[in-house]
Length: 281
Image 1 (cartoon, rainbow, N blue to C red):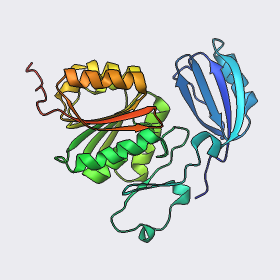
Image 2: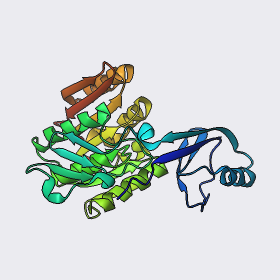
Image 3: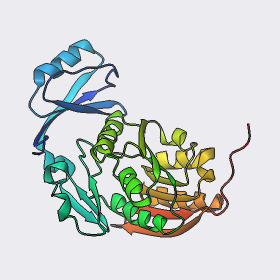
């Protein structure tokens, strides 16, 4: 199949888009909400559609519009090899027999969401999953900040685990769900839109969290965090990484491995030998 995104036309709006917004233009690809800004994505220029949205929701204001090739936005998502994981976009998918013995194939359509396997934090999380496979093989995994769902897919395939994949961003949660269906893993992976610090109270053996600093620190404060056995924590820059490691130590959670990429990105693989049991009601 050809790449459906080729060219992106991005409209940045000031304000929060009404969650009930329905855009029926055929070129509409989705939207991304970040704090006080909304980003509308189209595969063709759609100023009239954007004008209609602004008329319907007068609290919004057009800030900027941008046109760029999809490769520039996503970083040439296509084929990535990370250890045993063979990550292929559907429009580059090779016949099944072309995958070498021992490789773990993952079909990934990143759409407009970052996380195609190229970022150092994603690659280090995939490496850490290999360690988890050798350390008790967790049966239940929680992927917080799932993005495209790549780490949830890898956990389901490599660990044969049940996975809860969570992201606060609706577009990310929808993209992850699409990738779960693409890989026919609906029986193992459940996707949800939720805050990481709320979801972490659920049951799991392994927490995989690729989050920005403050979201990570809030998640580590949740009571459910210390009830888990294994942790893969990533997305941390220097100052937040130092604080995260301090908090792991305070909680009695031992850091087993650490990766630092480009002097900036930190990833921890940690183990809690005495996880707290949930209190009885």
